[in-house]
Length: 334
Image (cartoon, rainbow, N blue to C red):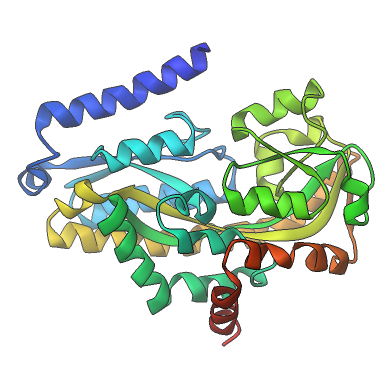
């Protein structure tokens, strides 16, 4: 066990221990009157535009709740991998994580489609999906079935692109490339369909894996490339835009259910507002980030993505998302 892993576990155990000692698991309503703290974990760096949204949420929740609810932020996965934090949340700990739909599909299958390839273009279409009545039904099922509560899911991180040491134009160019991916089935199947060899790995380990040639490539949105300094260990960014990355803030169902009703509303309302701040900030930053990467000597190229669209289309039917894709694309394009 590495020192970093030990410190992450200690941080999470400290949160859980505090909760157990104060009895928040069983008396959330009484505790809320005296003030509560929610710890939000994210893999992103503080320089990422999305983190500015989290800071806005932190300030606005404190103001709207008159200090009864405090947000604590833990960037760069200080509390550990997303999957570990989700399990702590399910157990009732006052923790939350900025997470993609693929990881939530383990608990509620429909969420996985949000990470499927070429679902909808840009932020506007994805926002329509994740604020729809259909999506809110998924939110209720996730809480009831798996004790996880979505606060909002309109945190857009941009289109994900291919990061390699060589030029890429078609799926054939990715044959044999060991490419990092999150461990969710929708991500693994998408990367495999694109021609690469999917290699699940925590985001925090990608830099060292690329620099030591354990990985041949990765895929990510431009702000994350800069935040993780991957521009130091790759030479080519091919703008495949294969996944339109929408994420959400997900917390403990039992903890959330124990809050006073006004705090529940504040937390969800301010989370949506902050998601828009984060997403618009991401959108505004993309052109300058791309130029800065080019200025550092990286090749950042637009290509004809139609071969990748065609190659990844079967992923929907393989995962049983074909009919759902059609419904969601109807919502996104409305």
